[in-house]
Image 1 (cartoon, one colour):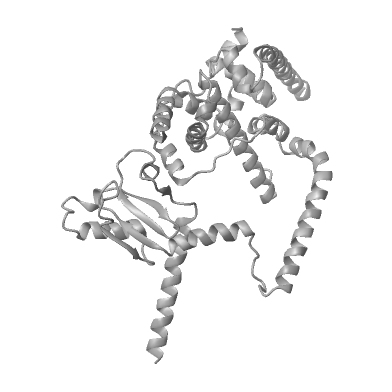
Image 2 (cartoon, each protein chain N blue to C red):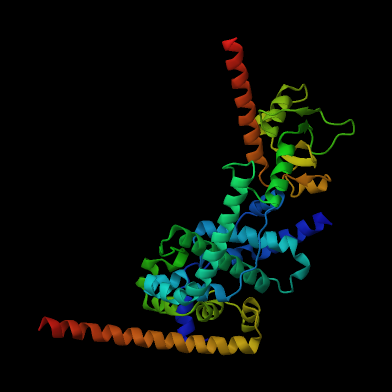
Length: 175
Length: 229
Protein backbone atom coordinates (compact mmCIF):
# COMPACT_ATOMS: atom_id res chain seq x y z
CA UNK A 1 0.00 0.00 0.00
CA UNK A 2 2.77 2.41 1.02
CA UNK A 3 4.74 1.34 -2.02
CA UNK A 4 1.75 2.09 -4.24
CA UNK A 5 1.49 5.57 -2.76
CA UNK A 6 5.19 6.14 -3.25
CA UNK A 7 4.93 4.99 -6.87
CA UNK A 8 1.98 7.30 -7.48
CA UNK A 9 3.81 10.26 -5.94
CA UNK A 10 6.83 9.43 -8.08
CA UNK A 11 4.63 9.54 -11.17
CA UNK A 12 3.13 12.85 -10.09
CA UNK A 13 6.59 14.21 -9.40
CA UNK A 14 7.92 13.10 -12.77
CA UNK A 15 4.99 14.72 -14.56
CA UNK A 16 4.53 17.96 -12.63
CA UNK A 17 7.55 18.78 -10.42
CA UNK A 18 9.01 21.01 -13.11
CA UNK A 19 5.81 23.07 -13.37
CA UNK A 20 5.49 23.35 -9.59
CA UNK A 21 9.12 24.41 -9.31
CA UNK A 22 8.73 27.04 -12.02
CA UNK A 23 5.58 28.33 -10.27
CA UNK A 24 7.48 28.64 -6.98
CA UNK A 25 10.57 30.17 -8.59
CA UNK A 26 8.39 32.90 -10.07
CA UNK A 27 7.18 33.88 -6.62
CA UNK A 28 9.87 33.16 -4.03
CA UNK A 29 13.65 32.90 -3.80
CA UNK A 30 15.28 29.71 -5.17
CA UNK A 31 16.00 28.11 -1.77
CA UNK A 32 12.42 28.60 -0.60
CA UNK A 33 11.18 27.37 -3.99
CA UNK A 34 13.02 24.05 -3.54
CA UNK A 35 11.49 23.73 -0.10
CA UNK A 36 8.03 24.50 -1.44
CA UNK A 37 8.36 21.85 -4.17
CA UNK A 38 9.29 19.09 -1.75
CA UNK A 39 6.59 20.21 0.70
CA UNK A 40 3.97 20.09 -2.06
CA UNK A 41 4.77 16.46 -2.78
CA UNK A 42 4.95 15.59 0.93
CA UNK A 43 1.38 16.91 1.20
CA UNK A 44 0.50 15.05 -2.00
CA UNK A 45 1.80 11.80 -0.48
CA UNK A 46 -0.37 12.32 2.60
CA UNK A 47 -3.48 13.45 0.73
CA UNK A 48 -3.19 11.28 -2.34
CA UNK A 49 -6.88 10.42 -2.30
CA UNK A 50 -7.84 14.10 -2.39
CA UNK A 51 -5.94 14.87 -5.57
CA UNK A 52 -8.30 15.34 -8.50
CA UNK A 53 -7.63 14.67 -12.13
CA UNK A 54 -5.89 16.61 -13.65
CA UNK A 55 -3.61 17.01 -10.64
CA UNK A 56 -1.62 20.12 -11.65
CA UNK A 57 -4.14 22.74 -10.40
CA UNK A 58 -4.28 20.96 -7.04
CA UNK A 59 -0.48 20.89 -6.82
CA UNK A 60 -0.23 24.58 -7.74
CA UNK A 61 -2.97 25.48 -5.24
CA UNK A 62 -1.00 23.63 -2.55
CA UNK A 63 2.18 25.45 -3.58
CA UNK A 64 0.29 28.75 -3.41
CA UNK A 65 -0.88 28.03 0.14
CA UNK A 66 2.60 26.97 1.22
CA UNK A 67 4.03 30.18 -0.22
CA UNK A 68 1.38 32.16 1.66
CA UNK A 69 2.43 30.29 4.82
CA UNK A 70 6.03 31.20 4.07
CA UNK A 71 5.18 34.90 3.77
CA UNK A 72 3.09 34.72 6.93
CA UNK A 73 5.96 33.15 8.87
CA UNK A 74 8.38 35.70 7.42
CA UNK A 75 6.04 38.47 8.50
CA UNK A 76 5.84 37.01 12.01
CA UNK A 77 9.62 36.94 12.19
CA UNK A 78 9.68 40.53 10.98
CA UNK A 79 7.31 41.57 13.73
CA UNK A 80 9.42 39.77 16.31
CA UNK A 81 12.47 41.66 15.11
CA UNK A 82 10.42 44.87 15.23
CA UNK A 83 11.71 45.72 11.80
CA UNK A 84 9.82 46.13 8.58
CA UNK A 85 12.46 45.00 6.15
CA UNK A 86 11.27 44.61 2.59
CA UNK A 87 11.19 40.94 1.74
CA UNK A 88 13.48 40.05 -1.09
CA UNK A 89 11.49 37.42 -2.86
CA UNK A 90 12.53 35.87 -6.11
CA UNK A 91 11.37 37.68 -9.18
CA UNK A 92 9.93 40.61 -7.27
CA UNK A 93 13.28 42.05 -6.39
CA UNK A 94 13.73 45.80 -6.77
CA UNK A 95 15.86 45.52 -9.84
CA UNK A 96 13.44 43.32 -11.70
CA UNK A 97 10.32 45.24 -10.85
CA UNK A 98 11.93 48.55 -11.53
CA UNK A 99 13.43 47.25 -14.76
CA UNK A 100 10.20 46.94 -16.72
CA UNK A 101 7.12 49.12 -16.41
CA UNK A 102 4.80 46.14 -16.89
CA UNK A 103 6.44 44.24 -14.02
CA UNK A 104 6.27 47.37 -11.89
CA UNK A 105 2.58 47.62 -12.82
CA UNK A 106 2.01 43.98 -11.88
CA UNK A 107 3.76 44.56 -8.59
CA UNK A 108 1.28 47.33 -7.80
CA UNK A 109 -1.73 45.05 -8.20
CA UNK A 110 -3.24 43.16 -5.30
CA UNK A 111 -2.04 39.58 -4.86
CA UNK A 112 -5.41 38.33 -5.99
CA UNK A 113 -5.40 40.32 -9.23
CA UNK A 114 -1.79 39.55 -9.97
CA UNK A 115 -2.29 35.82 -9.38
CA UNK A 116 -5.21 35.70 -11.80
CA UNK A 117 -3.09 37.28 -14.53
CA UNK A 118 0.04 35.26 -13.83
CA UNK A 119 -1.75 31.91 -13.75
CA UNK A 120 -2.84 32.53 -17.32
CA UNK A 121 0.22 34.37 -18.61
CA UNK A 122 3.09 32.61 -16.85
CA UNK A 123 1.69 29.24 -15.80
CA UNK A 124 -0.16 29.11 -19.12
CA UNK A 125 -3.19 27.50 -17.49
CA UNK A 126 -6.58 27.28 -19.10
CA UNK A 127 -9.24 29.33 -17.25
CA UNK A 128 -10.75 26.16 -15.77
CA UNK A 129 -7.42 25.01 -14.32
CA UNK A 130 -6.58 28.53 -13.10
CA UNK A 131 -9.99 28.67 -11.39
CA UNK A 132 -9.20 25.36 -9.67
CA UNK A 133 -5.91 26.77 -8.37
CA UNK A 134 -7.72 29.75 -6.85
CA UNK A 135 -10.57 27.59 -5.58
CA UNK A 136 -13.31 29.37 -7.48
CA UNK A 137 -15.62 28.64 -10.38
CA UNK A 138 -14.65 29.23 -13.96
CA UNK A 139 -17.14 32.10 -14.23
CA UNK A 140 -15.78 33.77 -11.10
CA UNK A 141 -12.27 33.42 -12.42
CA UNK A 142 -13.27 34.98 -15.73
CA UNK A 143 -14.63 38.01 -13.86
CA UNK A 144 -11.52 38.21 -11.68
CA UNK A 145 -9.24 38.03 -14.70
CA UNK A 146 -11.25 40.66 -16.52
CA UNK A 147 -11.07 43.05 -13.56
CA UNK A 148 -7.40 42.32 -13.00
CA UNK A 149 -6.61 43.11 -16.61
CA UNK A 150 -8.58 46.32 -16.38
CA UNK A 151 -6.76 47.35 -13.21
CA UNK A 152 -3.39 46.52 -14.74
CA UNK A 153 -4.24 48.61 -17.78
CA UNK A 154 -5.26 51.47 -15.48
CA UNK A 155 -2.05 51.19 -13.49
CA UNK A 156 -0.02 51.19 -16.69
CA UNK A 157 -1.87 54.27 -17.95
CA UNK A 158 -1.25 55.97 -14.62
CA UNK A 159 2.44 55.15 -14.85
CA UNK A 160 2.62 56.49 -18.39
CA UNK A 161 0.91 59.72 -17.32
CA UNK A 162 3.32 60.09 -14.40
CA UNK A 163 6.30 59.50 -16.70
CA UNK A 164 5.13 62.02 -19.26
CA UNK A 165 4.41 64.54 -16.50
CA UNK A 166 7.78 64.27 -14.75
CA UNK A 167 10.03 65.61 -17.58
CA UNK A 168 7.74 68.61 -18.06
CA UNK A 169 7.88 69.32 -14.35
CA UNK A 170 11.66 69.05 -14.45
CA UNK A 171 11.81 71.38 -17.41
CA UNK A 172 9.54 73.88 -15.68
CA UNK A 173 11.66 73.88 -12.52
CA UNK A 174 14.91 74.13 -14.44
CA UNK A 175 13.57 77.22 -16.24
CA UNK B 1 -5.27 36.21 -25.16
CA UNK B 2 -5.12 39.98 -25.11
CA UNK B 3 -2.05 41.98 -26.00
CA UNK B 4 -1.56 42.93 -22.36
CA UNK B 5 -1.47 39.29 -21.27
CA UNK B 6 0.86 38.44 -24.12
CA UNK B 7 3.20 41.19 -22.98
CA UNK B 8 3.10 39.78 -19.46
CA UNK B 9 3.81 36.31 -20.83
CA UNK B 10 6.85 37.63 -22.67
CA UNK B 11 8.26 38.79 -19.32
CA UNK B 12 8.07 35.35 -17.72
CA UNK B 13 11.23 35.21 -15.59
CA UNK B 14 11.29 31.40 -15.49
CA UNK B 15 10.07 30.16 -18.88
CA UNK B 16 11.35 26.68 -18.12
CA UNK B 17 13.40 25.01 -15.42
CA UNK B 18 15.09 21.72 -14.61
CA UNK B 19 13.19 19.03 -12.77
CA UNK B 20 14.09 18.98 -9.06
CA UNK B 21 15.17 15.85 -7.18
CA UNK B 22 12.54 13.77 -5.39
CA UNK B 23 15.01 12.81 -2.65
CA UNK B 24 13.98 15.84 -0.57
CA UNK B 25 10.40 14.55 -0.55
CA UNK B 26 11.42 11.12 0.72
CA UNK B 27 13.74 12.50 3.37
CA UNK B 28 11.01 14.86 4.62
CA UNK B 29 8.58 11.95 4.80
CA UNK B 30 11.16 9.80 6.61
CA UNK B 31 11.70 12.60 9.11
CA UNK B 32 7.97 12.85 9.70
CA UNK B 33 7.84 16.40 8.41
CA UNK B 34 4.69 18.24 9.55
CA UNK B 35 3.94 20.41 6.56
CA UNK B 36 0.57 22.11 6.71
CA UNK B 37 -1.41 23.98 4.11
CA UNK B 38 -3.72 26.00 6.28
CA UNK B 39 -3.09 29.42 4.74
CA UNK B 40 -6.00 31.29 3.29
CA UNK B 41 -5.74 33.52 0.30
CA UNK B 42 -6.51 36.71 2.21
CA UNK B 43 -3.22 36.51 4.05
CA UNK B 44 -0.81 37.94 1.45
CA UNK B 45 -3.23 40.65 0.36
CA UNK B 46 -3.97 41.81 3.85
CA UNK B 47 -0.37 41.95 4.89
CA UNK B 48 1.12 43.28 1.70
CA UNK B 49 3.31 41.08 -0.47
CA UNK B 50 6.95 41.58 -1.32
CA UNK B 51 5.76 42.96 -4.62
CA UNK B 52 3.85 45.66 -2.76
CA UNK B 53 7.03 46.60 -1.02
CA UNK B 54 8.96 46.58 -4.27
CA UNK B 55 6.30 48.67 -5.94
CA UNK B 56 6.87 51.48 -3.49
CA UNK B 57 3.95 50.79 -1.19
CA UNK B 58 6.52 50.39 1.49
CA UNK B 59 6.66 50.47 5.20
CA UNK B 60 4.27 53.30 5.86
CA UNK B 61 1.48 51.78 3.82
CA UNK B 62 1.94 48.45 5.46
CA UNK B 63 1.87 50.01 8.88
CA UNK B 64 -1.22 51.95 7.93
CA UNK B 65 -2.99 48.78 6.86
CA UNK B 66 -2.05 47.02 10.03
CA UNK B 67 -2.69 49.77 12.54
CA UNK B 68 -6.47 49.46 13.01
CA UNK B 69 -6.15 45.74 13.63
CA UNK B 70 -3.29 46.25 16.04
CA UNK B 71 -5.21 48.63 18.23
CA UNK B 72 -7.66 45.89 19.24
CA UNK B 73 -5.66 42.78 18.59
CA UNK B 74 -2.53 44.21 20.15
CA UNK B 75 -4.44 45.04 23.31
CA UNK B 76 -5.78 41.50 23.54
CA UNK B 77 -2.39 39.95 22.88
CA UNK B 78 -0.72 42.20 25.46
CA UNK B 79 -3.30 41.23 28.08
CA UNK B 80 -2.87 37.53 27.26
CA UNK B 81 0.92 37.78 27.44
CA UNK B 82 0.70 39.60 30.77
CA UNK B 83 -1.54 36.86 32.20
CA UNK B 84 0.75 34.10 30.92
CA UNK B 85 3.89 35.80 32.28
CA UNK B 86 2.23 36.38 35.64
CA UNK B 87 1.13 32.74 35.80
CA UNK B 88 4.60 31.53 34.86
CA UNK B 89 6.21 33.74 37.52
CA UNK B 90 3.75 32.53 40.16
CA UNK B 91 4.39 28.88 39.27
CA UNK B 92 8.13 29.52 39.26
CA UNK B 93 8.11 31.28 42.63
CA UNK B 94 5.54 29.05 44.28
CA UNK B 95 6.87 25.75 43.05
CA UNK B 96 10.23 24.21 43.63
CA UNK B 97 11.25 24.95 40.09
CA UNK B 98 12.86 28.23 41.09
CA UNK B 99 13.94 30.07 37.96
CA UNK B 100 13.48 27.01 35.73
CA UNK B 101 11.24 27.36 32.69
CA UNK B 102 7.96 25.51 33.08
CA UNK B 103 7.47 23.40 29.97
CA UNK B 104 4.07 22.43 28.68
CA UNK B 105 2.77 18.91 29.30
CA UNK B 106 3.06 18.08 25.62
CA UNK B 107 6.65 19.27 25.52
CA UNK B 108 7.53 17.07 28.50
CA UNK B 109 5.84 14.02 26.94
CA UNK B 110 7.55 14.42 23.59
CA UNK B 111 10.98 15.27 24.87
CA UNK B 112 10.86 12.53 27.51
CA UNK B 113 9.97 9.92 24.89
CA UNK B 114 12.68 11.12 22.54
CA UNK B 115 15.19 11.30 25.39
CA UNK B 116 14.30 7.75 26.41
CA UNK B 117 14.90 6.63 22.84
CA UNK B 118 18.23 8.50 22.65
CA UNK B 119 19.31 6.92 25.96
CA UNK B 120 18.18 3.50 24.74
CA UNK B 121 19.86 0.77 22.73
CA UNK B 122 21.09 0.35 19.17
CA UNK B 123 20.80 -2.73 16.97
CA UNK B 124 22.96 -3.00 13.87
CA UNK B 125 21.85 -5.02 10.85
CA UNK B 126 24.44 -5.49 8.14
CA UNK B 127 21.70 -5.87 5.55
CA UNK B 128 18.83 -3.82 4.21
CA UNK B 129 16.28 -5.83 6.15
CA UNK B 130 15.97 -7.61 9.45
CA UNK B 131 17.88 -10.89 9.59
CA UNK B 132 16.07 -13.95 10.93
CA UNK B 133 18.67 -14.54 13.64
CA UNK B 134 18.37 -11.07 15.09
CA UNK B 135 20.68 -8.10 14.71
CA UNK B 136 24.33 -8.57 13.77
CA UNK B 137 25.31 -6.36 16.68
CA UNK B 138 23.28 -5.43 19.71
CA UNK B 139 21.02 -4.33 21.05
CA UNK B 140 23.65 -2.40 22.98
CA UNK B 141 23.51 0.83 24.94
CA UNK B 142 25.89 3.33 23.34
CA UNK B 143 25.44 6.75 24.83
CA UNK B 144 28.45 8.57 23.43
CA UNK B 145 28.23 7.89 19.71
CA UNK B 146 25.61 8.23 17.03
CA UNK B 147 23.87 5.02 15.95
CA UNK B 148 25.16 5.24 12.37
CA UNK B 149 28.77 5.92 13.41
CA UNK B 150 28.65 3.04 15.88
CA UNK B 151 27.17 0.57 13.39
CA UNK B 152 29.46 1.70 10.58
CA UNK B 153 32.46 0.93 12.79
CA UNK B 154 30.98 -2.46 13.68
CA UNK B 155 30.32 -3.12 10.00
CA UNK B 156 33.88 -2.16 9.11
CA UNK B 157 35.24 -4.43 11.81
CA UNK B 158 33.03 -7.37 10.89
CA UNK B 159 34.43 -10.15 8.76
CA UNK B 160 31.80 -9.75 6.05
CA UNK B 161 32.60 -6.12 5.39
CA UNK B 162 34.86 -6.63 2.44
CA UNK B 163 33.13 -3.66 0.89
CA UNK B 164 34.18 -0.13 1.76
CA UNK B 165 32.13 0.80 4.82
CA UNK B 166 32.50 4.48 4.10
CA UNK B 167 30.73 3.96 0.76
CA UNK B 168 27.79 2.17 2.40
CA UNK B 169 24.75 4.24 3.27
CA UNK B 170 22.94 3.40 6.47
CA UNK B 171 19.47 4.25 7.64
CA UNK B 172 18.18 4.52 11.21
CA UNK B 173 14.67 3.48 12.22
CA UNK B 174 12.84 3.34 15.52
CA UNK B 175 11.87 -0.22 16.41
CA UNK B 176 10.53 0.36 19.92
CA UNK B 177 10.31 3.06 22.56
CA UNK B 178 13.89 2.42 23.61
CA UNK B 179 15.60 0.91 20.59
CA UNK B 180 16.76 2.11 17.19
CA UNK B 181 17.89 -0.19 14.40
CA UNK B 182 20.48 0.66 11.77
CA UNK B 183 20.13 -0.98 8.34
CA UNK B 184 21.98 -0.66 5.08
CA UNK B 185 19.87 1.70 2.96
CA UNK B 186 18.25 -0.04 -0.01
CA UNK B 187 17.87 3.25 -1.90
CA UNK B 188 14.09 3.08 -2.05
CA UNK B 189 11.72 5.36 -0.18
CA UNK B 190 10.06 4.57 3.13
CA UNK B 191 12.44 1.79 4.08
CA UNK B 192 11.59 2.12 7.78
CA UNK B 193 7.86 1.80 7.09
CA UNK B 194 8.37 -1.15 4.77
CA UNK B 195 10.34 -2.94 7.49
CA UNK B 196 7.51 -2.33 9.95
CA UNK B 197 9.52 0.26 11.88
CA UNK B 198 8.94 3.95 12.39
CA UNK B 199 10.96 6.89 11.14
CA UNK B 200 13.02 8.62 13.81
CA UNK B 201 11.04 11.22 15.76
CA UNK B 202 11.85 14.90 15.43
CA UNK B 203 14.42 15.97 17.97
CA UNK B 204 16.19 12.60 18.11
CA UNK B 205 19.52 13.99 16.91
CA UNK B 206 19.37 16.79 19.47
CA UNK B 207 18.49 14.30 22.21
CA UNK B 208 21.49 12.11 21.23
CA UNK B 209 23.69 15.19 21.34
CA UNK B 210 22.40 16.01 24.82
CA UNK B 211 22.93 12.43 25.98
CA UNK B 212 26.47 12.59 24.64
CA UNK B 213 27.30 15.81 26.45
CA UNK B 214 25.69 14.43 29.63
CA UNK B 215 27.91 11.34 29.40
CA UNK B 216 30.95 13.53 28.75
CA UNK B 217 30.15 15.69 31.78
CA UNK B 218 29.72 12.64 33.99
CA UNK B 219 32.98 11.04 32.88
CA UNK B 220 34.83 14.35 33.29
CA UNK B 221 33.43 14.67 36.80
CA UNK B 222 34.44 11.07 37.55
CA UNK B 223 37.96 11.72 36.24
CA UNK B 224 38.29 14.85 38.33
CA UNK B 225 37.16 13.12 41.50
CA UNK B 226 39.50 10.14 40.93
CA UNK B 227 42.44 12.51 40.33
CA UNK B 228 41.68 14.42 43.50
CA UNK B 229 41.54 11.15 45.45
